[in-house]
Image 1 (spheres, rainbow, N blue to C red):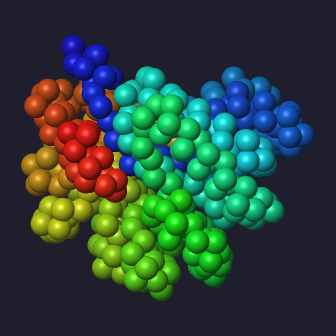
Image 2 (cartoon, rainbow, N blue to C red):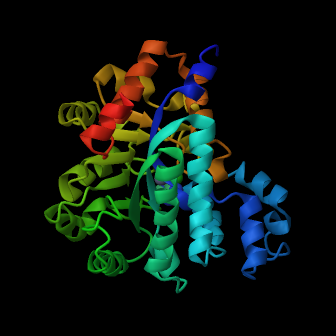
Length: 339
Ligand code: ES4
Ligand code: ZN
């Protein structure tokens, strides 16, 4: 599309990016060697023969759970604060340099580190050092959001949430919100209601992965029972017209990840993303990359893929960019700088 250069340079806010989803096969193999952490043997899974074979395996994911299997193997090689800082810095630098991302709200999964005996303080020290450097060196603002993991028992989420509160990470502003992610179908949102009610009472912002593989009712449940202020993915909300009307009336933004959805077979292709339905119903959304190192597409690639599928006008893109700024969790002053 002739709009691609404009889309690449368009000032962006990213709201749905997992920092651990920025671990490329090259960095995975390098950290495995450096930290002497073995990867699965190629005799058990031939994908682990080399970075190239692993990247090839990433192109044929069959489902969210097929992806999550590889995603959580990747975590094993992250050990020191410097590893976490290098991973996050690689994202911030890439997003600044290649996509003109001005503001990023980024997820990470504390439980998948603490379960390997990596302290919360190690993870957060590394990620927050990279965020500080992105602000100083790139003028890029960011918000760090820990996600609780749905595939683990709720009690495990509760323990991790309590440790984050006790560590003063939210009140001090080091962490700027609370998320919920991982496999969705067997775990309805309401199970996390007590934790999210406590977060709400403390003034901690809340966002929830819902309506990715789960039904529209899970999106409604995230609003009703978790007081979610944003919905991550939410693609399947498009199946329910009443829900679309509610999202529009309440101004709830969806953080769409159309390339991720196609890669994980949530949709058949990027063209199945509910872009037209959301625009027609006045539902706010932003366009995001999710796990760029695993889906082979960084945010500028996702913007271009959406353009190839929907042929939006420059005015429609300007509207999408404005909604992304307005839906961000930065201060009004920062929003003003980005408008
Ligand atoms: C995720 Cl694509 C996706 N869905 C749910 N949880 C996730 N964690 C990282 N990527
Ligand atoms: Zn996600």
